[in-house]
Image 1 (tube, rainbow, N blue to C red):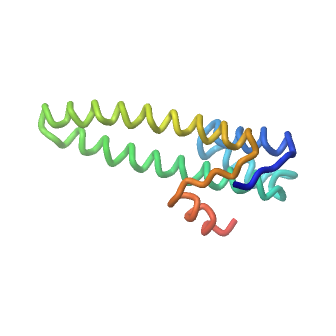
Image 2 (cartoon, rainbow, N blue to C red):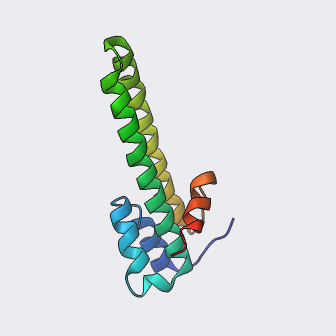
Amino acid sequence: METTTNPQSRLIAAASYLLFFVTGLIFLFVEPYDKDDYVRFHARQSIIYSVTFVAFSIIVSVFIQVLPGPLGRLLFGLWRLLFFLFAVFWVFLMYKAYQGERYRIPQLADWADAMGF
């Protein structure tokens, strides 16, 4: 578990999750944070997490609309639970970033590393 001690980097890394991919993109490309590896890691992970969440939301929404009444309502109820879990995990990621940890979402962090920017 790698940590950083720079309080400003920790705050900016946590803020990169704040407005989903928007703040991730801002902190990935804005000076002087574009040179900070810790901020860049969390900004990339924020972008990937946000895009995954949006894609998953679209797919589930389509299924909710297509499925017949009771199945659609059941999936909608499950979606509300999953949405809550996504939100809790989003806050957890902000907390880990603020604590100075490079918490890696298992598959998504690998994709974030492979983004190349």
